[in-house]
Length: 357
Ligand code: UD1
Ligand code: UDP
Image (cartoon, rainbow, N blue to C red; front, side, top):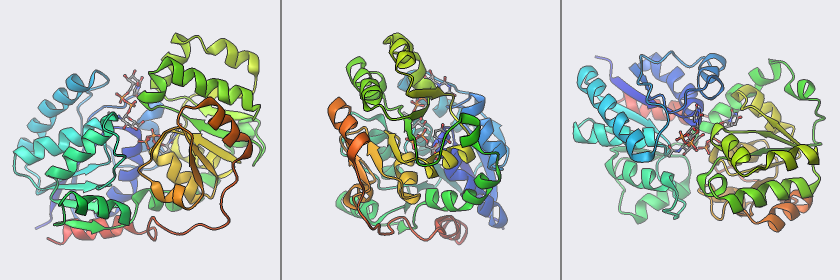
């Protein structure tokens, strides 16, 4: 009898990760796909399902936005109902969002085995909601699919050694898989009037940057004062703060920052590949910068993807205006990179481990 996997996604990076795993999973097992509805704007959700041919969710809980407790609680209620109904053999969760945590808690309490893709990541900064989500999800998980050796080592230090697998990173699989498709897609550089290797690509959505007036102001001032041409697809969390902190006027006057709506994955990887530098606080974007050999400046004090820093392709600048500005103007990466993120077949390995029970 086929294994019945209930997969939970909800936020943009989870669509990217699930796109490659679900495609293979469905050749071997039955999958029931639940979208919590944590992200819901067309260009934060449906666009990814369309472009990346992610199977249509069997159920969308339409939870939407809200404070952590409220959002997670609504997810718990919705996910418990669906798990009791579907009675899966295993629940598959991705990453470190509130959707991840809710899935782990509900499955754990119903004694359904939990498999966690991107297990073992740690920032050692518990002020990040994601760190709490990761610690708890990993505690509850039965199978822990680690993207890096660093992640395996973190789990070992926490005493988690059973069911731990070094699979490689499914985001590397996705970057390889969709690269050709991205080339075939209309030329986003042309439509934005950009020359390859002449602009910086920026993203910023971490609460410690956006929800803090001083931090976000420093970040925007660093971008302006760097005088680099910067393309900035703005996450919906950040757009409100640009208005609230009255940063829109200075951005408009400076003329070097192009604020655009969030783009789909295929456009994003075109923008990443052709950027001369990437400025970000995103986990996924830091790695994609590394995959495409683009120097990265990370607007955080620590990173879960420490290999990119050790290798000399990523620099941690926090929200410090001078550090960001200097890195935008001067950071040059090391000559070589090592391969820390697998061989592009992490998804196959994960499906093997899920379906061969
Ligand atoms: C969430 C994840 C974060 C991940 C990010 C990926 C948690 C705690 N955080 O952060 O780990 O890096 O997704 O992008 O799970 N909003 C919209 N439309 C949308 C989605 C969000 O307008 O489609 C706005 C709402 O005002 C919402 C805010 O963005 O309150 C934040 O959304 P939320 O999902 O709570 O957190 P993210 O910052 O997106
Ligand atoms: N991404 C995208 N369009 C955008 C910004 C990001 O397709 O406008 C992709 C990006 O390439 C990566 C993923 O979304 O694959 C990362 O998501 P995000 O930065 O929202 O979350 P994080 O990785 O920090 O959790």
